[in-house]
Image (cartoon, rainbow, N blue to C red):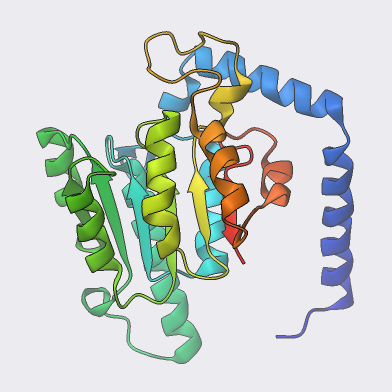
Length: 261
């Protein structure tokens, strides 16, 4: 599909604007202050997706949409399930991809025959959440595994499911300690297909004041961002998508959008 001159100009204006954001320390500081205040006030717990609570900022939900549209994955792997809203978000976007494919090709759309799937892993899938997810209209696209995301037997199950899928997208959003995220990166980043992403959520913990998460085992110096910093130098096949966080400004995943070359 050819791109018009007007569209090219619009895209260039966006690029120039994002470049300016990168040098705008006041904007970044205000965004970080707002994130800190909103996190203290539990703003992130205010949202649903298709009826299920999704513990994400709207900006990061937009990022999920953007990545799924661009990557067009066959399989989305998510660590951390909670109420299931994130699984439903990904599943609904995969359903839209199938619909768009059917429109473009003129094929008959039969959701029951789609291979696109979301695989969620959580150490504790509570019974009421499992029941709600399994009764949701998107349930046919969702598979869940209960267990620690870094347990060898769970990692092996995920790898077996991932076999045969051409385009794989990964979201890491379970335990946010350094060692756990480092182990998740070692386990799941290799499954990411070229041009796709491994998104490490809650890297922002390292940017908060020490002790901000007093009731959690993670803190400044022990969190997803410190894990990413340790892991990346040995994995040049991945790079940080800085343009994504410049677009969002408010995100729980600064330096966490990892694109596989």
